Amino acid sequence: MRFVARAGGVCAALALGLALVPALSAQADPSRPSDAIACDVEALKDAIDAANAAGGGTIRLPSKCTYTLTVVDNTGPSGDPNGLPLITTPITLKGGKRTVIERFAAAPQFRIFEITGPAGALTLDGTGRGKGRGDGWSAASALGGNDRDRDRDRDRDRDDRDCRSGSGLTVRGGSSTDDGGAVFVDDNRSLTLKCTTLTGNHADDVGGAVATEGVATITATSSHVDRNTANEEGGGIFALGGSVALTGGSVNGNAAGSDGGGISVFGDSLALIGSSVNGNVAGRGGGGINAIVDSLSLTRSSVNDNVAATFGGGINTIGGLVSLTRSTVNSNIAGRDGGGINTIGSSVSLTRSSVNGNSANEDGGGIFALVGSVSLNRSTVNNNTADVDGGGILRVGDMTVSDSEVSGNTAFDQGGGLYQDDGTATLTDSKVTRNRAADGGGIFEEPGSTVILDQTRVIGNFPNNCAPPGAVPGCTG
Image (cartoon, rainbow, N blue to C red; front, side, top):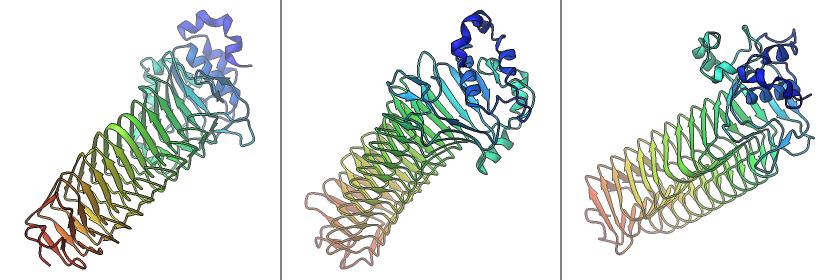
């Protein structure tokens, strides 16, 4: 029997967080570590109910345990069915090595978690070891902690090493009739992932693994959102408002029927540090990332081997600040413009980064940038291909390039390295070499635009370095 069905007689004790220990200890299983709840779906549901009633808590899950959900537990405020009780308070599920929460493949369609009011905040933590002393969960840990919980976490560095080597918590097989195949995060609520994998989930609408609404937050560390699908946007993650921050993880191998094969975000910010968004597919724009945000930042991250049917094989952005530092956008494909990056009205800055080996069926094999601003510093745009103009870069607006290289790109019409249309491009201490096009193998300057070369070499391009003849001062051949 579910805890909520029998909770009436212990409400007063719940307020003190005391009466739950004997109730949950009665579920003891001698085959499991003593500080974890039983490897049983009803035990997990009861523990979530108990934590909600107590105002939050940490639920410890046994390692090498699979919780297989077969029936709908509730229909949440989202209007969609869920497999586990609603998360309405700050709750941590701390799993161990090979802990799995899954929806049975033949079960009715439902997502796994819904995080909602009045104070829902879910942490999925795969760094637990499932051993020590305890009774399976602790309200105190969510309300300030105690010595026992601090002792359990003293080997945090060792847990993180185990996480990187493949252990951790997995949530898989969720299937939402609407948004968020594994997790739906409501307005002003939050999801935190640590050493957790969300895989094989599906949404009929947006967010194959995770979807948020309103001012919600997603924070993930050493976690993986891989091989999920959405019929519309955000094959891995969809965020409508709020912020998304990923550190040391991946969003790989996801697919979306519309924008954002890996990630689609409309909101405040998307930040990636030491993460990968690789091998995703979008039925429209943003094969890896689709972002309409105030700030998009990538640091030591990769957006590689993605495919978009239209714009931005790797990244598609509209507006906001876009910053790439020591990052790669390589080997992506766009069905139209911007094989690597497609940007409209954004302020784009690349530092020590590469946009290499991408292709576009129309313009901007590496970068297609319309209005806004573009700055490249110590970066490379090499070996990209456009079937029309701008094998490396097609720029409409001002651009500065310093100490960078635009080399080995191909356009089948004009501007093998750079096609400059409107605005001023200033290239300083840079190289434009070994590019090819029908005309303007290195640089094609559209009438009305300006290209300024400052200590920059434009050499070895085919069939000519710059076009029209004499348009770019200091460029010959």
